[in-house]
Image (cartoon, rainbow, N blue to C red; front, side, top):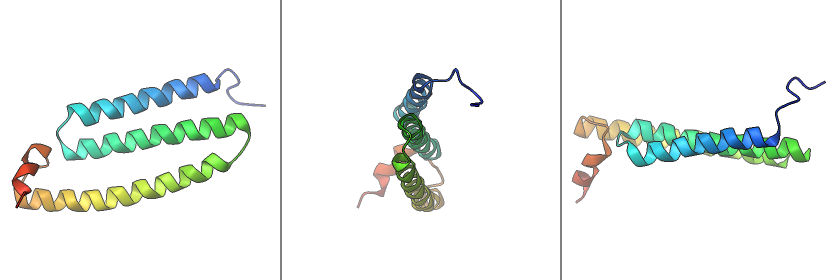
Length: 105
């Protein structure tokens, strides 16, 4: 017996589109690098939710392997991105992306 039989693939897709849209709005509207990283992670998790929902709908586990690789890439992106962000904060004393043009040669 399923726990939530009334939830269909459309519900998963609606939540996924909402999360992805919030991520895009955060990237476009905010200038803080930490918030931009969080919005990229939000978009990646929206894609993961959609892949798992389609995987469940079709009864295959292929998409769940892609989700695993997306999570590995996201973890690597956070590690490298936060290291770069820490160096930016150490040199510029801000995490705003507006000062990145000062890093030019």
